[in-house]
Image (cartoon, rainbow, N blue to C red; front, top):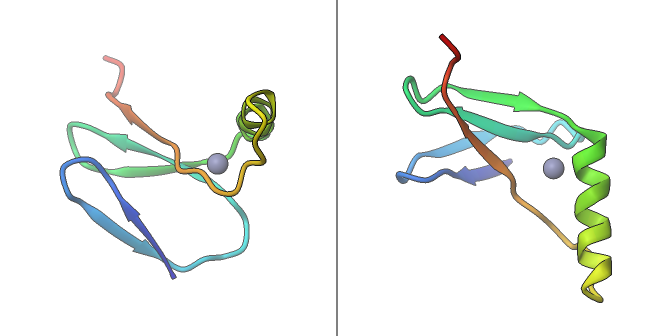
Length: 68
Ligand SMILES: [Zn+2]
């Protein structure tokens, strides 16, 4: 079970299904959208590496608003 803490104190629990994904939060409705981006995942490793670190864990949340 994974616990995600989002800004504003919202905690969301979800079953760890093995596949890694990150989240977007719709700031108007509070809806949580899952997404996967191999490019972003790879980039985070590269950034850590560039600073002399190995990436152990990360948490990435995009706060979004629906286009109108
Ligand atoms: Zn990720």
